[in-house]
Image 1 (tube, rainbow, N blue to C red):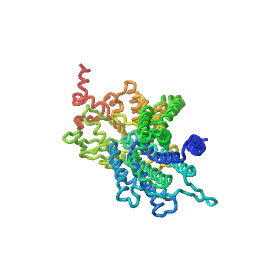
Image 2: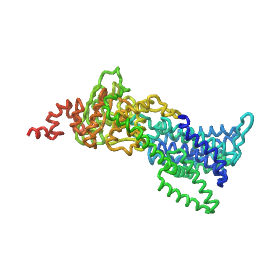
Image 3: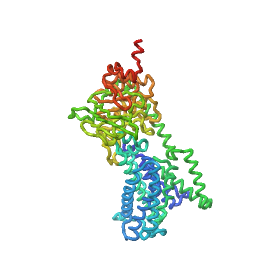
Image 4: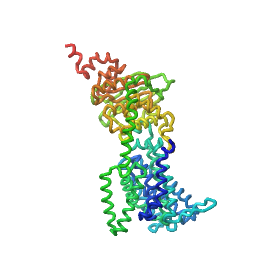
Length: 611
């Protein structure tokens, strides 16, 4: 039963693909149109992994579509290569390699700059195909004479010529592509790609190599595009030059948006709507070139009222219902767990170096300059194992900049940082998180469209798998220790009853606890918390203080907060910053009685109380 449940989408796709040749002809569907839909659907599978799951909008997919198609077509027409399927695979591999090269360049920029680079790459490929390489690509004439595949089974030979006889071959290619895509998006790699789409900065901060995973998604999309391009040549009997045109990339994006990005089958649904309407408007209504105007209006209406696309809108109804049912199922045991003191649910520090006996963290002469502005100047700071250190200071004292330097989010202008005996000065935030130094953020940095459980999974995956691993075909739920670590973290921050809820639906106090949970999930040996009590109500503050006390057991922590009463209750030692420098350090009692602190930070509170 569990196997059937896991394969339900594969079985549904298989049933629909097998039924299509029997159901669609009576409805007037032309076989060539159905075959084109499958090619576009396969093209869209890779693009959806890149755009829908990773959040990278590329306008250059036509470059890889054309590359794979023309390599396969050249082998089959000019080079006399006899094996169609092998030529298609070679074209796919070449497209993937070209995607890797292009990705290495394009990934140097993000957002609109990344998109513009892909536009430029597509135009370069289009120019090269029509000019310097025209002797190999046929230029504006393309490459005619691309043969159709045949498969020798020993006892018989299957010929896939054209029309409905070619459909089984294309349907098989699409089914294999869909099955592989489903494995990828439900693997640890797929979970991390979704996290990168939501918040790449936090994905890096919990220990993942964001650049490596982005490049992986780019190469996967290029491979799918290359195979689809080769199938286009097989379908049409020649490889058309318009495969390299920018219009090809634009049509792919539109079809994905119509069908629903982040759904895998959305591009296929979008292609079906696009191509069937195109045939209807041109063939039946005889609109000529005006079909683009009508389809443009259809696109505007659909994306205006179905922002998640057709498949996305349907899926949203089922997801919301399933989430409510899951939360109801765990509500009672979650309430019982929340009532249990968090101290009874200890969590080991996996990264702690038992052989190291010096200060866990030591900063020497730490300075940060922004032009002529000095945010921090010559700070000496050390934290011993098992210590809970508090840092206070007014706004503008340089606390957040100091924290960012400690976690290597910001490189210091001068000075050094040593963590458990290793000099980490100049390393990136991902590297130091892997060493066991993590932080929570003053402003919540969460994966808002993912569930609470998925948020914690992302952080735990970085600890279990390291910063980069290509286990793309492994099911997420088979990773040893993942479920236990996630449930333990949820229990510690008392969010078991909200595990299936999207983060966007959480109350503010719950989000703050989840923010702490993300930092805690990798079991660091040093945990830095940046204003964990900020913006909370009095009752939420009291609950969070108790939570922090529980977390601190057997752990080294540094906490920044403006709530000095709470910090004096929590911390064993306090460091006071003023104008980017260390003003004084001491126990809470020493800090309270220090005249400089009373004057600069407490405003003479004790004197007023004595009067």
